[in-house]
Length: 612
Image (cartoon, rainbow, N blue to C red; front, side, top):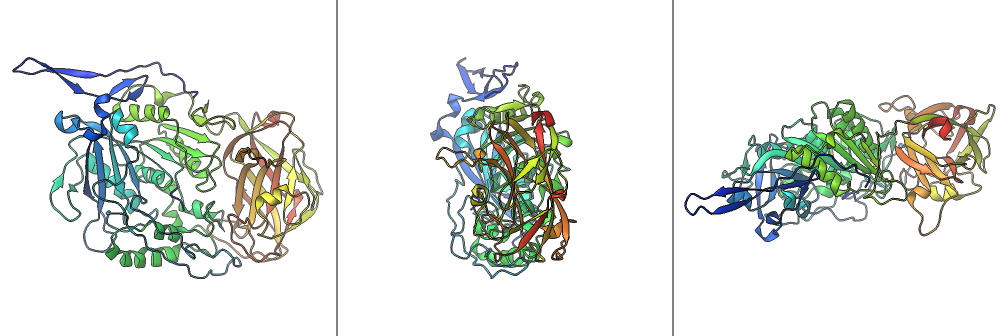
């Protein structure tokens, strides 16, 4: 499941070491530990580095909502790890905060937990199984993540279980408002604006007297989504976030341009499956939560029949909630993350940039997860949480891309993403089916129409490698005479007719010949991908059955990418119907006929036509 350097030296070097205080009686010098900064980064302080002396405790922060129906405001379970000097020496420090629904365990992967994908498009799938989570974990420790990295560097680390998970009260909603308001309440508590208690229903208060009030959030996958969720509330004190592979729209995670499409690796997952997977909260509250959230709100909203974008999905799209956001954003993602796809970070990064927020983005060429190098994260938090003027917010390069053969610790800096030098280059199709057709920048007219026959039993790799098959259409460029750098979002327009009222439409952009060697990398073969429902050719919010034999024009974006295709390779545009690893599996036989003259692909090529 989804338990989802070429760094320019900074000119400013700030060092804060210790302060000395004379005792009034013995006139002795007492050394007090303080954070240390060098080259714009927080350094490990030996006085903070003894784990045996860390103070670790937990508490329950009161929120502003009641989602489990017991008539009481939900409280979030929070743990704290801090240097002992925050007790003995009156030291106040900023906070690194991670929240998650996964800390207390998840549901087992039993047969029938996922939706059955083997049915016709538009049909209702059989009911699925609802497994129960066996709650794990003990007080006071919720998680040990982030602690060894940040506590020795002069931070306090805080964790919280999200609503309806672990010892946090309430209900999971998978993107609902309470999952934004819960971390907001914790940040409010760290700033003295909300109440914390020693027990889930007790009245003895806990104060965050050791907090400066400045908070940074980070985490991966769902844990990376929650920093963005908190930031969209505009909560004071949340200064900076570093989301890693965050899911920023549950529609984009479980649908694609009107199509019911699973996240990579989890065929048949949907938002209600994820709900069951994380629902580790109070067993006595689960029936109420299930009835209200899973069996009513989700059941009525997810719409696996049409895949249309609706109010349910709009309420779980963080792009729609960004107006109050003021936290600095350092986004991290993998271009070959086919679970939480790279568009999730891109869309939020561009909006934050448009809003004038401090922004940077780090993209690598690998799969799900992958934080930026620790030095980059350190500079980000050092500036925004400790207030050290290290220049990170004024860097001339806002984008850091790990090139295909480089380590993740060695990204290449660029002015922005997409590369500002990238320009659209349009490619057109020439006939060739069932063999291979051409992909050219010169539009050839009267190329006619070509037909493919849907058969989900052939996966995308097999179709891309086949020399002859009627289950896909493949169009390739001549061999590249120089490296080709793609940076940004590719767009495709397909003019098609279907033999049935509904059909899947899948598109892969591949680098050929396919590399089958043991040492092959994803970037050797897959450039980018995209999926769409032709029934949504007009709008994401409204689909209409296709008239068999009638041609429709479908235009949609492929996943963002930044990749250098090597000299001697060919770029291949593969059009097919059902994608075995991602889409529903209707009975084979649906025919898609493509009008070649009405179909085109636009790539963002660095240096534009000259680059090709």
